[in-house]
Length: 413
Ligand code: ADP
Image (tube, rainbow, N blue to C red):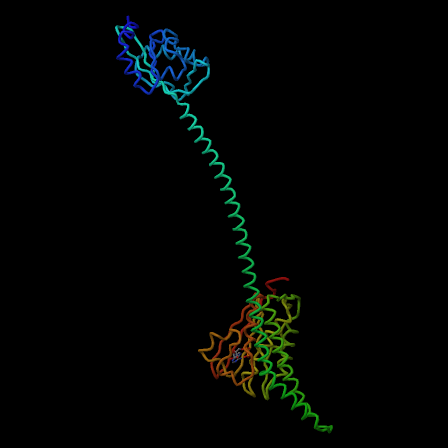
C-alpha cells in the first residue's frame, strides 16, 4: 500500500523533506495526512505522530473548512499543480488554536494508482506583518503628505494674496508718486512762469497806472482811458494765465467735474467777443455773426467760454495791428462749429504736429508772451466733452482753428 511505501522509503523522503525550507504536508484522496516534514510540524506545533492519519482539516481554521473541502474535491478532479488562495488570504491553525497566515501550493501525484496531494506551506506571518507595516507607513506618509500639501497650498494662497496686495499698494504708490511729481513739476513751472510771464505785464500795469495818474485834467480823459485800457488788457492776460493753470491742475489731478447746464449760443458769442475786445491790438477788428437764430446748448458754459476765448486770444496775440479776425459760428444738426481765423504769423510746418503738446510753443511765437498751455487744455477739455479741436495754418499767412462742439455734453456729472 502507498502508506507503506512512504514508511519504507522514509530515508529518501526524509532527506528531501527536511531539506525543504517550506512546510511539506502530503494527504491522500480522503485528505488524511500521510506525512509531514519538520518545518511543517514546527509551523503547526505538532509532533509527527499526532498528525499522521489525521484529516487535513485539523490544520485549517473552522471558517475555511467547508470551503476547503469543496476546493479540494474539485482540485483532485482536475489534478494539476497550482497555487492556493487566488487572491484570498489563507490561514493555518496551530495545535494551540492560534491562526497564522500561510501561502500554499498544491502538487498532485500518484503512487501505485493512488492519488496524493503534496502541499507546500510557507508561514507568511512576518511577511504579512511587514506588508501591514509598510501599508501603515504608507498611509501615515500619505496623511502627512496631505497635511503638508494642504499647509503648503494655504501658504501659497496666503503668499499670493500678500503679493497681489503688495502689487496693488505699489501701483497706488507709483501713481501717487507720479501725480506728486507732475504736480511738483507744475508748481516749478508755475513759479518760473510767474517770475517771467508776470513781470512784463505787471511792470506794464505799473507804468500805465503811474502815467494815468498824471492826467488829472478833465480834457485828458482820452489819455487816461488809453492807459486804463492797457491795464485792463494786461490784467486780463494775467487772469487768463491763472485760469489756464488752474484748469491744468484740475485736469492733472483728475478733478474736473463738468458743470453741464443750458445756455444760449448768442450769449456765449457775446461773452467771447466782449473778452476778446479788451485785448485787441490797435486797428484790429473782429468779424462775428450778429444775427444768428438763438440756440440752446447743454454744455459746461465756463469751459466752452474758456476754450473759445483762448483761441480768440491767440488770434489777436499772433496777428499784427490793423488785421481782421473772423469768428464764424455754424450750427449743424448735432453740433455747432466755431472757427477762429486770423491773418497772423501762422505756425511753421515743422512745428504743427507738436502744437497741442503741453508747454510747446512754435519757434516764431517766442517773441510773444505765452505759456504753451492753452491749446493743450482746450483740446483735452473738448475731447472730454465729446468735441474736437483742429487747425489749418500757413506761416506768415494766418491760421484757422476749428472747434466742433456737440449741443449736448458727453458726460453728465
Ligand atoms: P501760448 O499762446 O501761451 O504760447 P497756446 O497753447 O495757446 O500757448 O499755443 C501754443 C502755441 O501754438 C503758441 O505758442 C504758438 O506757437 C502756436 N499758436 C497758437 N495759436 C496760434 C495762432 N493763432 N497763430 C500762430 N500760432 C499760434
